[in-house]
Structures are given as C-alpha cells and as structure tokens.
Amino acid sequence: MLVLLDREGDLTARALAAALGITERSVRRILTDLETDGYIERQRVGRRNIYRINFDLSLRRSDQYGATVGELLKVLRLPGSAKR
Image 1: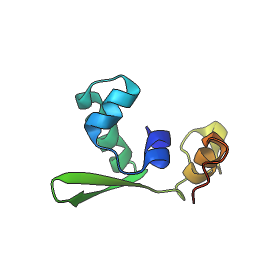
Image 2: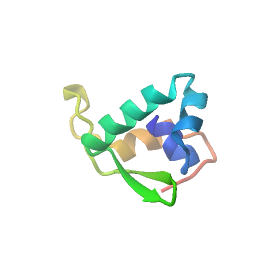
Image 3: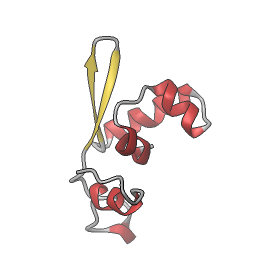
Image 4: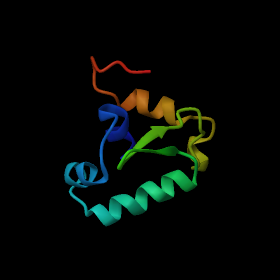
C-alpha cells in the first residue's frame, strides 16, 4: 500500500482496493493501522482524504533496524520514476 501511495500519490481507498484486489474495508483498516503507527498522515480535503507518507520513520522489524520507510520505497521504485 505504501508503494502505491508513493507511486501514485493521491489515491482514494476505493482506488487502492481496486489496485490491490482487496476490499475497501480492508484498505481502510490498513490505512488506520499505518496512521496509528505514524507511517502516514491523513489530511481531509473536501470530501477526500489525502495520505502523506512519513519517509523518515524507521521500519519496525528488528532485522530492518536503522532503515527508514523512505529508503525502502526508494529501493522499490521503478526505474525512471524519480520521486523525493
């Protein structure tokens, strides 16, 4: 989900669900978990939510200690899709 948010930017829960092949309810649950853990911030704009990734947050698994969300997403980006 973070990869999609990073690549596409402004996606709705419905669009995320369609892209991932899961229910919108599951997407909303995952987004809530990511927000609770500080990996994303949710901003309400009109009737939509905009999600911003916290690129500086460290990954939580012990074998990934010291790596940040931004570093992981940089590795997962497609060639030629330079961002941040």
